[in-house]
Length: 205
Image (cartoon, rainbow, N blue to C red; front, side, top):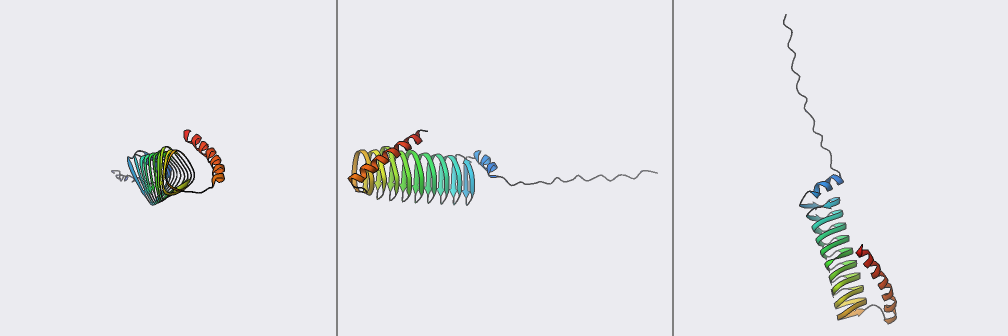
């Protein structure tokens, strides 16, 4: 008798398991992208040629250009940073533009703050309009319009309808309201000098 033929076994289909990407994996993928956008997301470290954040939060952003709208960034290193209604912990850039936002420390060549506040602005040229900062230090010029600072130090300072605690400048122009009398300014100036020195050391690191 002929033996019964064995039925050929069907190939078992391989199941494709999709794993959720971690924040670290997302960051690694972003590093290979030239331009990346985040909308209502929370991410860790981001590195790309251009980064655009909208209602999002990021830890560290390293990019040639950074644009943030209603977002928060802990630390940014970029060529150009433009932030509107956003908060930035620390930014180091060639050009910084902050509108209706808050920033702790900004370091760069050209710093522009409009309708916002900052702790310290350290740059070559600094412009403040309808805003204020605790400390503004510039190698060349500081321009303040309807704003002010506790301490301003620069080669050239121009203030229009503003206020200031202490001004340290080779050349000063403008209409300004001081916050201290002569004795208070002397004491505050000594303290400010120490703080500016510390900020200078931090900047060189």
